[in-house]
Image 1 (cartoon, rainbow, N blue to C red):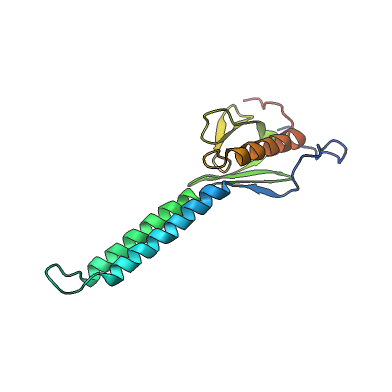
Image 2: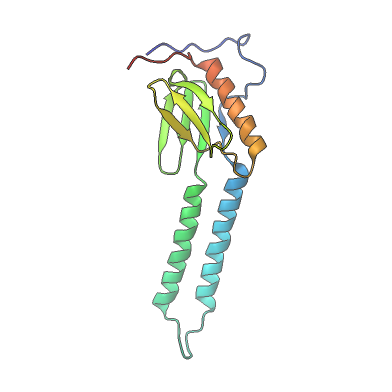
Length: 166
């Protein structure tokens, strides 16, 4: 693998963010976590307020299942809010829904966010691409474009930009 040299201050473009930096879809994350908390509160309130007598009484087990369903829904929404991309001087860490991958800058050849893409894709030196779901244009397209440009500038400044032999 080619060695990675840190850029000197004179070779680093002025628009590079200070490292370490974390990119994540803040609005999407706020909506998902807020919705999860609200739904969990609603499920718990319903479980507490439902009558335990009458024609169709709710039993303790019904209430427990209702709260567990609320926890499951909130957990899925929290999982959907997990993606982020963290960059530092040594490389980039991509956290997607269920995976986490650490890359050295030399492994990242290109950062892509094309029209219609749901998130950024990293073209890697081994010939594969990696989805970086932490930068997604969903609710905040302008921010996603800024973040993608910043990550691209970091990859160009710290990476070698040369494909590795297979």
